Length: 212
Image (tube, rainbow, N blue to C red; front, side, top):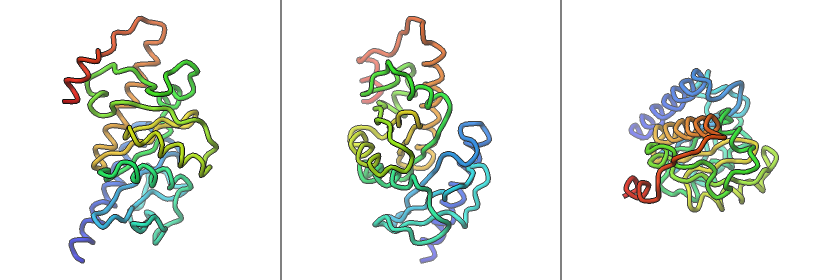
């Protein structure tokens, strides 16, 4: 029991630290975005509704049973189902980060992107940390139909981009999910800066080496 409590305390503190880091660098704002992490018991800790990632209180994080039932802490975000359907499809994931980061959202609004893989493989780190980025069709925030759409895309990718909304990224650890989300945002920024210019993305052969 002591070990479980120690694990939970550390994870609560880590969620708050990651949230502040993300907020302080302008990757989210106001009360947008949410973070979750999974305990070894299968239970989830998640940022609550109406909470700024810049000022999270570890003891007030929402807690869910392994079955996805809210079991403690503040009222959960209405986007909790986004996290739960990512865990269902990405079984090895230990954390999920969902942001409304500016450049990724901008890319999600463009009409001429590839819905199967929104961003081109511009850098090695994008390929290694994100890989592919399918676009999930638009649904209003909190619409439960979005869960089915996300689950479908998450079968083949640990990162998805919600149209006119933002990215949802799963990782083995919270830091993995954080770094992948940040790499996605920087690649979206590069993509938008380079629009109208001839691109030289990594070739399929170069991508294959990075994934081997």
